[in-house]
Length: 414
Image (cartoon, rainbow, N blue to C red; front, side, top):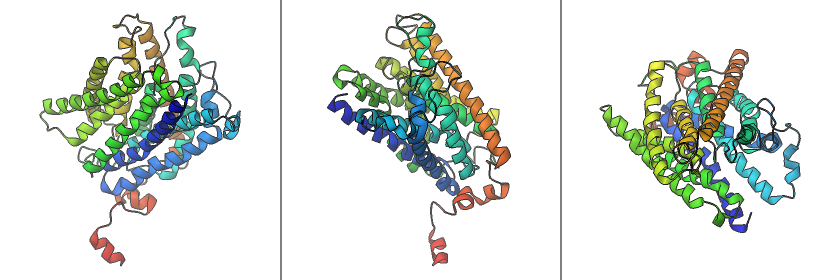
């Protein structure tokens, strides 16, 4: 890794770390006023806990290859507190970059259980999910594990699973876990469209801007591990502009076709859907296919977010509709359009088969493990707030704080 790559990877790690506070703002604006503190604290709590676990054993688990689907990659204490990296500065920078991915993946899940989860129970789930799901899956996808080796094992010469920045490990992983927790915790009291109205559109847009900004570190950052001039940072950067831009237009078009108005929340959601979709494919498709991918993700995510009202599951902030659905589309997209290996771009069906196997495996593993963990927590220490606490508001009940203090409240305190 040359000096330019080192500097860029350091900057990219900082950009991706910024995404978690950006997510806190995005989620915070989407919830009701009395749940803002709780929603933002779930992101910051994930940041604190997962960062500590990553240093203690997460990096070790995610960087040592596993030989099979069921084998966790690396023993948790094989390399405690990154002891082997003590004199390896390049390795430490790479480990720091990896930590930011672990943090944002866990934080994403919290949007599905807004307004009804206990903070301590959420942290317990976050720690268990990171340990038993994210760290092993990251090893499968990027650490030399079975997904990384799948093409070779199936005898597909020159073809391997494409997941450049986290379609499976981040978005499908988080989206499947979000669906499991939404089902375990059940619907909020008063579940309906009125309950879903965001309390602060500006906060949502600020959060979206920070997420899009940070996403350049998310997607282009890995190019810093080598020689930047020999890589393809320009293509990745352009695709990270193109897909979310098309995602906005796709989402707004469907809003309009339904007879509604083009909303700011829709634009923000379309941008995130496009960013999610391009994440795994950003280094392997041309910009025209990135535009189409973004538009498809915007349309599909919009449709999927509407589906929850028919299915009557309470994914509070549409983690399933945006991250799971767009993540699946983005993960399968290289199977059709990847340079040279896509089914429609000169290759055969091998790439699509690899993408499908990896996506379904991560979805099933994450959903199953999250269901078990969430159910176990609910039946032991309790995961969901009581009815009284939920009615009173999660901020006051759990944190004893309010996001906003009105003049009348301030006078009473004085």
